[in-house]
Length: 447
Image 1: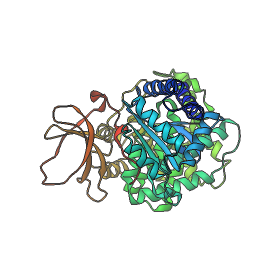
Image 2: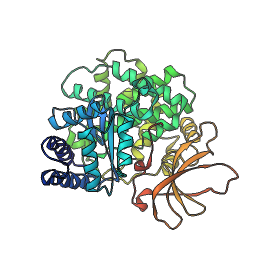
Image 3: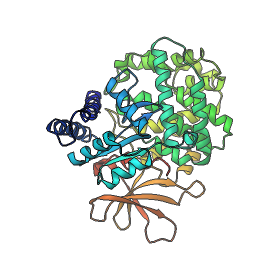
Image 4: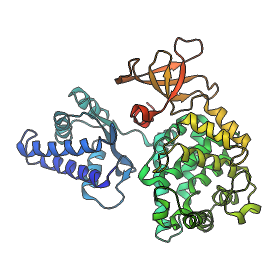
């Protein structure tokens, strides 16, 4: 998604709100701004069917772009959201100029705060704009999406520190991994669903968080203690830090690398180890994960010089997580594997590249159709697996997205699949053949 287009939408949004101080909502000047804002949102919605704008610890974000640098328009919208006790908006494909006018009018004229504002927007008929009310911050560490976003911000700060030549603080990383580990112990599939979120323009950035999430799911499947999970999660979060010392042109190069470029890539585990060696409260096992996540189970990987120094089983778990996330992510040279195909591939390379026992524990914990799988039911409906029961993986929740004729539903609905029921899964469906991004259909915030 184009960052300049995102910035333009934020700029126009802020200008439209300012304009209402001078002109009525139906004044030609306001109408022109509404039209410009609608066109800007339309361009963003060509990439996704739903665009999220909101606050992350007081900072405005639009989708995966966080306005960390000074940007007055973003600061104005953030301030307005806080004053209305809102955490954000969701803009959906097909939104009309009237719906945008309604939103601007409520923001300007006092549509209430928090849930009152949400209700006012709904009552005015703005079906394709959803306001999200702020919730009690005390619950943040129990809400998967908020913890995931916090992890993204932590990684962003660590990356910035490394780029500036500073020694990153480990405190925030340790704290967020603690929250992630606790959530994984209670509901591993909720956290795992979040790893389906991909930022293709910032692969290394989101990959770090996703590997941590997946590694924690693997660790839970292997019956690790909470302390071991926190070590594993921290190693996953920091495993690719060394790539920040590699030429970005090599990291982002489409297609195959030359032999010389691949030799350069092979240096990143050592670079990462040297970075975290300077950080406080980093244990030897975290160091091993960073240094050894590319060694492979048969030790045919790299760096060869680290082979005799790697003994922690957590390294093998992090390697599985690294592989699974890479397989399920769209790359310039690779179409993403579906979750079911990714687990099949993990089986194929277990015993050589990956630890066979840990792979089987992980696959068993995911179930036949892991969270994030698009599946066809026996009546030809197509839905998304949104939840797998922790104790019995045959019990799944599905959000039905396509009706039996293949038409996309305007209002997807939830259903639970249980043994001996009328509905059953008969096959996995590749989302790309249906032209959808499954993450658009996840409801990842608890109600």
